Length: 373
Ligand code: FAD
Ligand code: UDP
Image 1: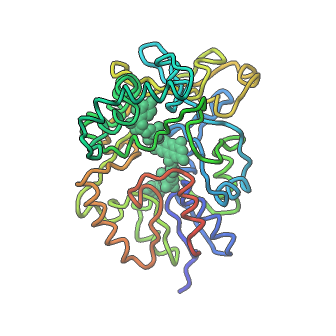
Image 2: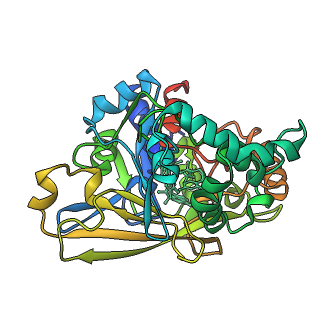
């Protein structure tokens, strides 16, 4: 018997929504379901006092892939937001990523040559103690990249709060992707393109899902047999272990708790992102959402502001699963589930939960654009 839909898409995040968009263009019949009360997954924003509040954490779109950039801009235009976070260590402010502004603020050095000499001096002990071998953990990596002062003031406390583990127990690669620049350049990303959708991320999701049948407050697992019967193929973007009834055990995550506050002032911190890098302050950073979309006078035309303090914590059942934990137990477990998934002819597993993989937004879109539909 012919089924009603070609694709049942479980999850309306960027993976599901982009897949639905492409499938519709290819003339396929799609139904998108989501267990949350809204569409959009983790990029969803809630409007408070005229400000788009990133409900599941601050999202900044960045990519060097022109095809991905052109694709998202064909759905909604992007603004000129450039991420340039500031770090607050014991009340003193430093620019990020580590660049000439940071080195000037830290040591008073004014030229790249002075900065290079200072960094060499700062990292000399750590380099010597490695004795030619590769850095074995995040602490060694950071000390040999930027030296003692920056590690102590801008990395150690922040990283230990974010990951809930000591720097010497964390993998080196986490810190490798942070740029170190001998230029006065506070742009956090090296990518060619970045920005925020004009009007907010919900516009991107609405554009992707235009003309597609969607249902919210519907959990696939509440009536699995029914949902499996409605379409020829399933696109599954929920949790991989849940799809298999947790038969090998549960995958773990780290999560973030947000404390949101609406303030009766137009401008609280003058920047979208301020990191608090000392261990003693319990949150990792404060996000002031309006700065993602309002610049210059428009910040003051909107009399209120919304800030979110972010607390990084271990995940337990009932919390939002955000970041996969890349330790050997979880990697091994995920491998077992992936082996089952690879043998599923009528299910496409995609996205950060179904692949148990940390993905930025642009690589998610790139992946869907490269799928054959
Ligand atoms: P999701 O957005 O999680 O969507 C999955 C959807 O599936 C959800 O809506 C969920 O409700 C639904 N679902 C799950 N199970 C079921 C079920 N059983 N039945 C029905 N529906 C179900 N990327 C960047 O590029 N830049 C950033 O600055 C950035 N910041 C981030 C900050 C945080 C705190 C986090 C966690 C991620 C960040 N990301 C960022 C990554 C970005 O969020 C992801 O790339 C993107 O959201 C992944 O989309 P997805 O569709 O895979 O997953
Ligand atoms: N980091 C840090 N101090 C900062 C910002 C970042 O030490 O002020 C470290 C931290 O270990 C973090 C890593 O750099 O995990 C990568 O930072 P990024 O902002 O890319 O991490 P994300 O929050 O996007 O995972």
